Image (cartoon, rainbow, N blue to C red):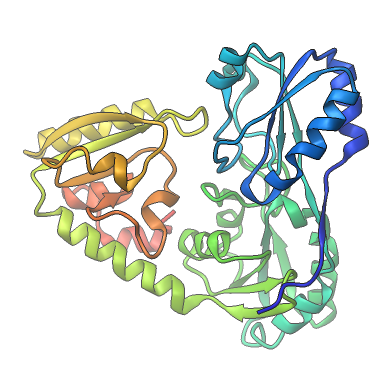
Length: 337
């Protein structure tokens, strides 16, 4: 389907102001994949503001993925991070970071109105979106209220704004899950929408403003659930586990990794801790004696469909099912994410 023309608000004037305000002399510019083509232009703005600009060419998966070690090795005194809101405590970063949210300059009304036919069976609707459309929440709420819906917007948890979700954090949506019958997600792609379904186990309708369309997501999410159960079943036969510790600033969960390693060993399994910055199939293939993995880093690595991994890569909650400390039914009641 053809995507309509749109742009992102890159706040060039604010970028200049922040460079000058911080007195920055060397700046590391970090962009998500969709915004990397803007790197040279934004670097020129940084240079015009009096600082040397270095554009990070590495992948950027979110605000959990800050290039702190790279910044230190390059001797920069400021990071400019586009496309996300703050996630990592500044006591961890020890370096000033400017977050520019890159809101999408795209109309959402047409897609939301197309979603109304899918929302007919329910009267109580929860709203969720990414930071790119967070300024449209009130507009969408008004459209739904005009049709007689009761609309709920989740409170903030680790997120900056009510109604905002992250790929790894749906706590705001879960805070209203018991009040709503279904969710409407505003945004493009399926990544966050499937996460919303898995976190709340509620019907989820997507209003995609980039393609001016709406659709129901449940069938795709059900496929993810089926594969999750298949991976859990396979891991029940495993003897040797690798417990993955994410080395990215916002994905490091040492306490959970130590706890699950101990729990696995008490249940008769062998377990080894693996520190990884990039968790890829190629990296895990270097450990052929490991039968299954426990992912304590980004939970979405375990839930992508289709899975790129050739061995089970379980979330913490799923691993507790394997060792008999949790049940599949309990997991479904609470939400997979």
